[in-house]
Amino acid sequence: MRFALRRMALSVADRVVTNPLFAWTWSGSSARTFTERLTDFRSADAQTIVEMMEGKYLLGTRFIDTGGVSPFAIETDAEDWLADLHSFGWLRHFRDLRDPGQRRFARTLVMDWIGRHGRFERGTWSLFATARRVLNWLKNYALITEGANPEQIRTINRSLAIQLQSLVVRAPLAADPLARLMAQIAMAGAALSSSEDNPDTEKFVARLEACLSAQLGADGLHRSRNPFAQIQILTELIPVSQLISQRRHELSAAIGARVETMQGALNRLVLGSREPVYMNGCGQAPVELILSIAAQSGSRGNGTGTCDGYGILVDGTGKLVADSGLVPPPEFAGNAHAGALSFEFSSHGALIVGNCGPAPAQLPESRNLFRHTSAHSAPTIDDLSNASISGGCLLGGILRPRGATDMTVSPEDNAIEMRSTAYRNRYGLDIIRSLTLLGGGHTLVGQDRFVTGPKNRNRRGDFIIRFHLAPDVTLERADGEDLIRLAFKSGSPWTFLWEGAYADIEESVRHSAHFGLVKTRQIVLSGPAHPDAEIAWVFTRQ
Image 1: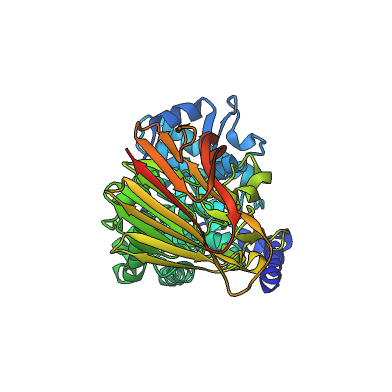
Image 2 (image 1 turned 120 degrees about the vertical axis):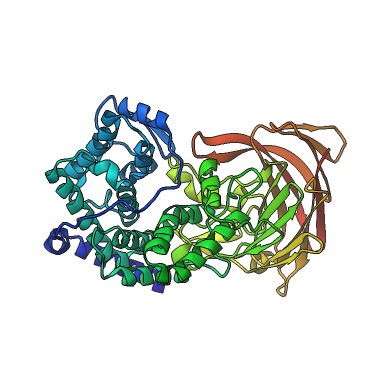
């Protein structure tokens, strides 16, 4: 109730300060001047520019041909496409070009945006998109002002100043902590990019450090526990941290230490396939972006251990990340998944077992279905999700725990043991999952046990244990054998063995940022859930 009331109060306050009767007090901010000091470590693609000049825009997960019309004049329900468009992250593709016409095209798009959307609009001026837009304009400031006349430069500077002031006013009222953090990154970056020394730089850097302190866990992972949120933050935070070190070295120690810890946390959650684990809202992320972030730090952190509720096993070329199911605080749980006891496993640089990931933007009605435990490689009873999703606009679909999960990692045995109490109240049972990685990453041994909890319940149920396999897998099952042969696209032959359950092979899907949902297969073990039931299973490379 407190969360819902606070969320409603913040929403009302934000609508008040963005109302035209009030907004004039910040939308009339005097123009400031800026200098390009922020860098962008992300890779650029010249072919993208050719396509954009032909009116073809591949943004988010959608490709749209505008037919030569300005992309800002297009009406579409592709929210992820619009978010990428209005955030201007694509400006980096123009930065190394020498052709004057192509570089002028970038400024034309910026001026077109100012002409169409320069006044506050709730959709295009969301706090998160505005912060990213400001940062991307500052990273490419020389590009968008090169060859511009004095009036155009004043227009760009004035728009930047107005957007920055909107961040100052609206950031304290944001219900989304990630958007609030992104706004603090943008304000600090802008203060350091001012042509004249900004007397408020120290204040903005201090606010950024305080916001990071409040939103990061003990191991440096964002409290949403979403690896993609970590990627989004680091993409914008690293250039700002580097600029703080260059211009205000005395302020850089705390921020620099935070960034280093965050990079280490992200590295621990990236599999050998160079993909972040599909957990708590994270789906496919560009491999080149993952590599670019890793290149900004010497931090690796790839050994067996823990990271803010995740357990990591590493052996040879094998890597496994398991989710204890720690549910974030309510304001961080809007995209969290009910993935307790689930895991993702890669070997020899290829994914073997994973989760389905988030629902594509084109399927918003299926969003909560992909957050359900059944979309994860985890055990359940009667396919009941091990955490519930609260509906309603006030609660914003936050994840709420049904029970607690304990996790123990043993580096000596290269093993993880997790215990979930999510089914204790209904079935009187706890689930204990044990995972051991050995043989240089060629063998994963697992065991799922059902034990009596403190409360006895007579309600009966059936356990269902799912293993969502990597795309392009071919399965072969011999009659009468508790053995399934798996052939992956990488060419590696694997075998799955089990005992204590019935096994079926069913259809499954895996999220792809480029192709939506990719069809794959899943192995499903089932049987009666009763005290002392034990199911053993093994994935082993032949």
